[in-house]
Image (cartoon, helix red, strand yellow):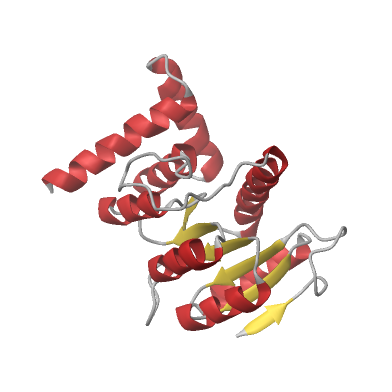
Amino acid sequence: MNKAAAGDEAGPHGKGRILVVDDDRLVLATVTHGLAQAGYEVIDADNGDDAILLAREHRPQLALLDIRMEGKSGFDVAETLRDAYGIPFMFLSAFSDPATLATVKSLGALAYLVKPLDVGQIVPAVEAAFGRLRLAEASGQPLLPAQPPPAMSGGPLADPVPLALGVLMHRFSLPREEAWRRLQRLADEHKLSVAAQAERLLAAVEELARTA
């Protein structure tokens, strides 16, 4: 395990402290370097056990988690971060099957990014997540619920838009920008908000999962 820092504390010149967890050392090094270059203090781990130890020691403001790893999965780590330390998280994974998406949403991830992605796509998603964290802090409203929401419930944490973008990116091999445009177009066609259209898409995924 390693700590690659832009300073020991996320001070006024740092954008925030983030824990990155991936058992692919190349992906881990690439993402860690890219986020550090973007101004974040980065703590990295290549397995779930080390990730939890680092989270307890350094209390990152956000975690970016791979899902399928040897030993503890990203889901296991996310549950511990949420319940024990109140640390919000995002997922970065090559998998986008209905069961995985259902678990992602039930855990309350801030976003779900589908590999392969380059750092230029990951950094804006991380910046958006930190924006939500700062907004929640400024408003005095907790970002994480005390208990996990029911699976596919669309609870207060489970922002449907990032999850729906992940579905579109995976199913149609789209870059994030094109997935966003497609989601907006679908929303316009059905005279819905983008969030409502995202919920509609995720509900269809849930239905497929039940009937598979």
